[in-house]
Length: 291
Image (tube, rainbow, N blue to C red):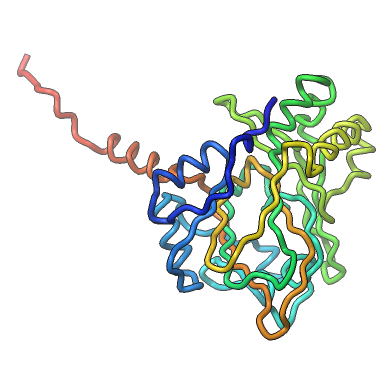
């Protein structure tokens, strides 16, 4: 299965060109856009209205334990924080591939947006992995291994915060086939991944994960890496791609800052829902007779 990244050119779209943005998200699973931003929640509200994303989502876990960068609007800040201990939000180290919504069923968070307020001095490239196409390649060559990733108890993601009496966790498949045949991906290699759990449930899950991990290498064709510059926003299908970042060096006086918004809907989905709702409420205009 060829990666959907094939043919992508490093272009930054005008955020107001909704047709082009929807085209790239549909074709590649993501789009990079530019606009005149205010670098606050209003930017995400504007993008939500443009691309029919609905309201922002913010997890209970992050509100409780990582409140430093969390805003009531649902937006959160990544980097440039003076307090906090989040592995990614408060760090300049690399972030392993993951999907957002660690302790939710895969596919719950359908859209993630990262808006760059200030890029790093060096490094900090965004990394994308076309996990769904990689899974389809696995299924072609090793269908038995692919099947075990669909098992309802194939994988566990769990928190490891010592401040918690009871850790957050979610158990589920790593990939999921929806009713319409579309595949949902939740491939994750970060600290939340509990591979010991998978080993106990079915050791073949580790073999399948190892196959996919080999496809995360830069020359595989299934990954992309690019810098996100100040004023650029990355809109991505969190239910289809895994993402991460490289380590970076920042200017202490002008730290790297990204603003993040998570959405439960895919671009365009809320528009479809609204049209369906209007049709269902419309009065029956067919002519009626008295019999």
